[in-house]
Amino acid sequence: MSFRYIGSKARVVDAILERVGKPNGGMFIDAFSGTGAVAVAASNAGWPVLVNDNLSSSAIMSFARVISEEQVAFTHFAGYENAISALNEASPIRGFIHREYSPASADHCDVARMYFTEDNATKIDGVRKVIESWAEKSLVTKLEEKLLIADVMGAANRVANTAGTYGCFLSKWQRQSRDQFTLTPRALPKLAPPASMSIGDVSNISCTPDDTVYLDPPYTKRQYAAYYHILETIALGDEPLVKGVCGIRPWQEKASDFCYKVRAAKALNNLIQSLPAKRIFLSYSTEGHVAISELENILGNLGKVETCELDQIGRYRPNRAASEAGSLVGEILFCLEKRPQKGRAAA
Image (cartoon, rainbow, N blue to C red; front, side):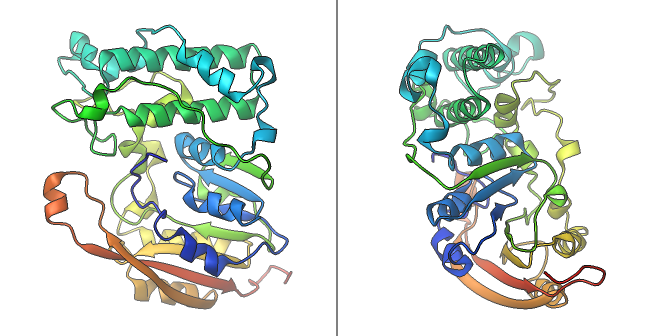
């Protein structure tokens, strides 16, 4: 994956799966899936996986990483690689991405939004329109459509003129942003455990006492819906009303309580208390809104909890100044065995 995603667990995923263990009859639910690093590791370990995220872009990216070659035959194109080749031949279009997220935006808003070069923006628009047409004509299945959209997001990210997120663009073109937007087929496993996807608020996840739930909530003030707004627009294929220098799509309805210091502890307590699953794993950081000791108290009231220090990793650094002032933060994993709740029969 080419994404620099805030809070990514790519560096500690092996340590997480070591504590999760082997499949035990239930499903592994990655409830805040992000780019799917933990879901992929669980799938590779043999777990049937459900990925969920409140952002369509994240859920689709994650789901594309846990499906198998068998599930996306691309029968109409005689294979996945041929479908990718056809998309790379798509005609450029001066569509929404070109109008709002390339220097062409200066024609109507007096700001040259340098997220993508004009050539790359028109190519993104053209490819996304072809995928939409294929789906409308049933030339691709729902799963195939999601895989291709994930590939578009990955290819767009490789040529984006950003420091890693989409909260703003850079004032000078970076080397990678001048590269040509090109889709590349990913390596898919021939077979994989069953996988499913949901998009929505984490509190609406459907799970059973036998399932294992992994939680990796936001833990700072950064709202993912704002930081990754362009990927969300590519995923949805819509044309929202965007404003401001950076053209951020409306995101307030996706705002997370976990990103607010005064709400985070209560939100975590309510979420974990509401989940029927007996085994819950919670990733958190020593720089998070909720103190580690407070989380231990919250979880201790719900069952038997073990606190595991996984590693120290570099704080997210969006620019050179932040890199020079950077420090290490601790990655913590809480392993909870919940007690049966009052009013709920023991499984």
